Length: 298
Image (tube, rainbow, N blue to C red; front, side):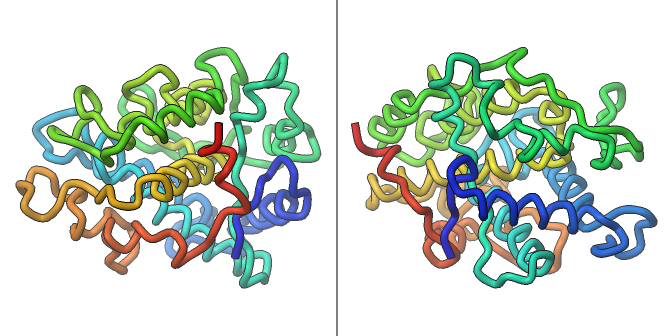
């Protein structure tokens, strides 16, 4: 039950590729009640809906899964849920999503030349066989039905975070989050990793660097979304190991305006299960990483 490096573990990389292709096929994994849409497309819908649910509704910053404390546990839950479907798709109960170590790609003279983007790996999803079926409308913000190839704009904006920069965040940020629990002024590892503050702008910068569909609320259309967020989760795991006494914030004494983000609130879901941030804190209940030492050692 190990999450491995996509760049260096060819078997894990190929299993992930095979799994998302099967999960994307409506004939193999149909989204119940949605013609020509798959369970993979359902994850696109779920992510978009989380971004449209503002918490509280009278502001335009924090939503149910971003710009607030739930960013890390919600995406951990999102990945674990997809992982369950992928295990069915590849018929392997031990399968776990690999991570994209974009710190390694940042060290290349031209990160676009990384083997991650070869036609044998993620480059193949930019071909005609991988179809985007749901996308965020730039004019209305709504999700709309389409049928087009995946779009990327590798390296045309943003930059890949450096390993030293990530290590600095892990080392220096001793608190998980802090009031007012937003993207503008909250200090703590969550806001630094999400990328609203700090030099590296970690998570956000990678979305911008990939560009295209990764720039939209429907960003899970690109399979690299899950590899990227797996690495973001690995950073949180490394921080947790470095700061074991730093608790998740906020607790349940926080006001109702922080619904979805308090430790025992139900994370926003399209499923009927109820999962809280508290249940997502201990990642070792679900998986471990092949290594986190590259994120914590100088």
